[in-house]
Image (cartoon, rainbow, N blue to C red; front, side, top):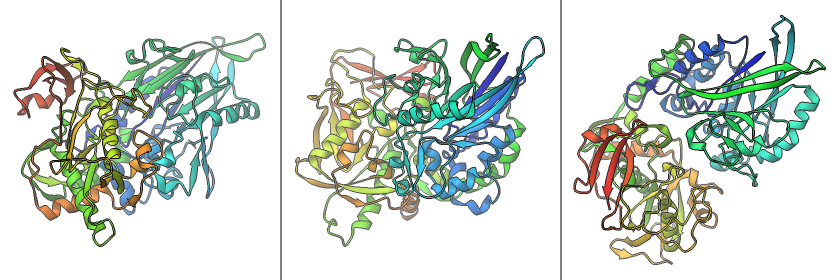
Amino acid sequence: MTLRILATSDLHMHLLPYDYLADRPSDRIGLARTASLIQARRAEVRACLLLDNGDFLQGGPMGDLVARRAALFPDTHPAIAAMNALGYDAAALGNHDFNFGLTFLRRTVARARFPVLAANLSMRRGPDFASFCVIDRSLTDPQGNRHPLRIGIIGFLPPQTEEWDQDLRPLMHSDDIMDCARRLVPRLRETTGVDLVVALAHTGIGPPDPTPRMEHAAHALATLPGIDVLVAGHTHEVFPGPRWQGRPGIDALRGTLSGKPAVMPGFGGSHLGVIDLHFTTDPQGRLTVDTFSARTEAVAPATPASALVARPVAAAHRATLRQLSTRIGRSASALNSHFAVIGHDRGLRLVNLAQRWHVRQRLAGTAHEGLPVLSASAPYRAGGRGGPQHYTDVPAGTLSLRHLADLYSFPNRITAIRLTGAQLRGWLERSASLFNHIPPGSRDATLLNPDFPAYNFDVIDGISWRIDLSVPARFHPDGRLACADAARIRDLTWQTRPVADDQIFVLATNSYRLATCGLFSPLVARNTVILDRDAMTRDVLRRYVRRQRCIRVPDRPNWTFVPQPDTSVLFETAPVALDRPLPEPDRLEGLGIGPDGFAMMRLTL
């Protein structure tokens, strides 16, 4: 007797197989394509559950349009309409589902024909979201006897949620995942009589030993009695898979965390999690899991889009295309992130120029007017887990709203904080932890730490510096100290003069950096916030481009690597970069396409 659990996660409004930023169909994303696989896998079994693990309402131009112009969509939100049509049984909320505010979220999920869960979230105003739900299924044994099966579904989201969207702090509180699970899972089992508990855990796979308010708690959850099955997410990775091989307590082939079946189904509909639980009955006639299998299936490029999703999303798709075609200005040069990790990214510099322009305007006539204004931004679209197409790529010529969305993809707001020169150096030191330690004389060493997300690689405009890769990284990707004596930042200057430790600057950045958790939080916690969650960054970028009319951004890196003789490194970039002029042709060499579809580049240090 088999129960099949199908799971999606981190859809991020990728409902159709269409890349809005490149303005072309895509064979890598889209719930409509995943839906065809869902329908096929459902048809193979008698008893099935379809679950989603959060972050389905934000991400991409369609999500922004539906949230900001709600009057255009008075009925059901396109994502909810698609999920209703597919017959989802339950969904957990993810942290990005709160990006457009609590009122929008409540109004949106009210139309869902399935429970929406957030067990470790408590509301200061209004009713809580449901912590868990119970779903009934019936299994049939080989003799034709029917056996009722009660399944408890409980949902968790990162406890940092209200820190990342601080406008939510007066409205809600997200609790520690493990504390909540220890409290609620026994209650779920005792009060409902469920036979099985599935945790929809919008959290990554971290260590099995819990720490307070840990962001990546899926493995720790698996160690708790009472949880039988896990769906992980949040980090856009795929589990089971070879990346996890060799980690204690994880079977990367069988798909278990501490012996329990688990999946993490990628990003944007790229994969479908499939867990098959095979039941038998014990001598008392109770259902027990005899064997199981867990896998993630990649959605094949040739998979057609299902009309179940395409129909309810069609109107929003057309409206999104119309909105994105709005012309804003012109750019004299191409803007792409293909070589952002070695210092060449005109698009990133354009974002920083717009932020500096806005903050200077806002500080005019204040006590901070005379301070030097710097600007920090990161390459949000620079490959990594997003895949080989996940790069900013804006051609020279007309700039439209589509291109601005490509340059800045998150609904963040501009903020500005006061920093000393010493803190500025510390900011860059944390950012430079993106790179692996490269001892002199290394040949074709891997440049980037795969666990360090590009959205934490802040580049600061208005200063210049060098990064010494012969020195180990001082910080782990999560901000923990890795090597206290390490100092990679060299020759830090402002207006050609060395930056003094006690020198005062204003740093324009985004609202996400104000969180009291994360890589940069120790540098923000004790500092004066001069501009607190002001205008939307993309709106400022639009106004800046319109004012300039024709953008001319020099390809003059803010930073470089300290040279290392007889040393070379490898990094991945977009395949199209192999056909474009190289920014440093005497030091860069294309090596072709790698097994994951990325172009491989060699840089001589």
